[in-house]
Length: 138
Image 1 (cartoon, rainbow, N blue to C red):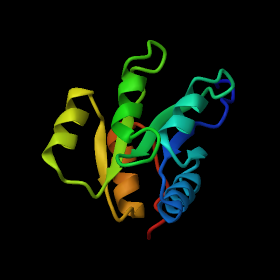
Image 2: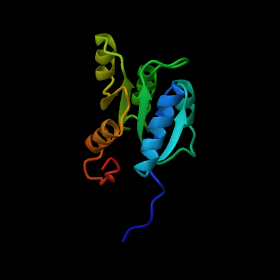
Image 3: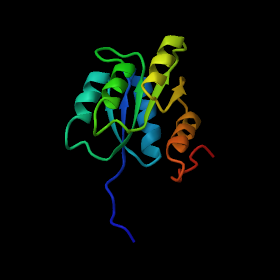
């Protein structure tokens, strides 16, 4: 019917190695190619590279060294080519100012820590309602 498309990519920015590994594993199980970075600055640089096409969403921790998830979100929303990319923040942080700032920058949602298969799948189903995801938790 249609031309085969390159595998969809999700970019993950998370400074905690265990959390990053869990997120990447879950996303790969769901059929995505994952680009993972341990801070927002590296993630931003990767997004700006031409070869990193087919990124369909960004999942980022809020608190990271070098560039926070909020600053990464601001950069994405300020870039003409990337501004509409779904952006989800992973957080244990519940301070109101972060939530207010993220909402002001049009964040698409949150995944609360600890990261679980159910939380990740649920959020992706919200972002991509027409996509079928495998039920790996059954």
